[in-house]
Amino acid sequence: MNVREKIARRAALELSDGEVVNLGFGIPIEVPNYLKEGIFVSLEAENGCLMSGPTPYYGEADSDNGNAGGLAITLTSGAAIFDLADSFGIIRGGHVDTAILGSFEVDQEGNIANWAMNAAGGNLAPGMGGAMDLVTGARKIVVTMQHTDKKGNSKILKRCHLALTGIGVVNVIITERAVFKVQDGPLLLIEKDPEYTVEDIIACTEADIEVSPDLVDYRMSGINA
Image (cartoon, rainbow, N blue to C red; front, side, top):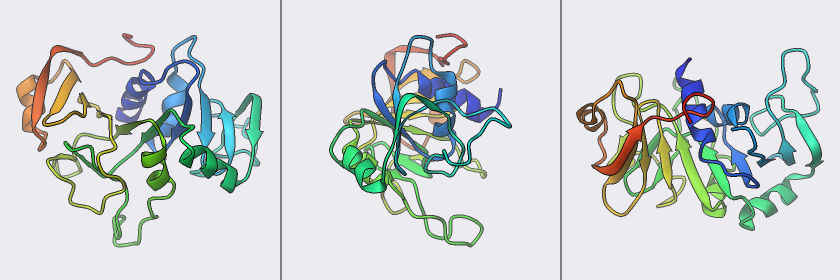
C-alpha cells in the first residue's frame, strides 16, 4: 500500500452517512474509493456536480464527466450537473458538511496554506482555487498530506510560512504517520502509526503536540476500522 492510499483510507473514516462532501486535488480525490460499507455521501465538485461516485475503471470513463481537477468521475443515481455559480452557492451557503483538502503547510492554530507562487520547479503554481471558499463555507475541514517534505522538514508547523488560504479553519490533520485534532494550544495527537513512537512523532513535527490519553494505532477504512 502506498502513502496516498493509506492517507485516503484514513480520511474516509472522517465521513458520516448522509454528508455533503467536497474533495480537493491529490490525495482527497481517492477517498471515495475507500468509504466504509453503509456510508453514503453526496460528493460535490466545485466545477458543478453533486453525487459523483468512485473513480471509473480504465476504459469506462465518460469524457463529459470530470471533477474540478479534470479527472474522470462516475455519477451515482440522482446525480446533478450544474454551473459554477450554483456550485459556489452550495459552498458559500454552508451546505457542505466536510471538505477534505491537500496542503503545502498547516499549523497548530488551524491555519492552512495550500498554494504558493513558484512552488513547482520555478513555474507559477495554480492558485488556491475553490479552497478559499471551502475553508470558510464547509462545516469541517480535514487536511490530508505527507508529514514531511522531500528534505525531511515538517509540514506541520507552529505557524505557516506561506500565504494563508484560511485562518483557524482546520479541524483534523491526517498524514501517513499520525492523526491530529486541532484545538486551542498544542495539536492533539489521537492516532499514530505503530511503527513510530510518540517521541518519533514529536521529533518530526515542528508544531507543539499534546498526546491524547485515548491515543490509538492508526486506523484505515477496510483494514482495521
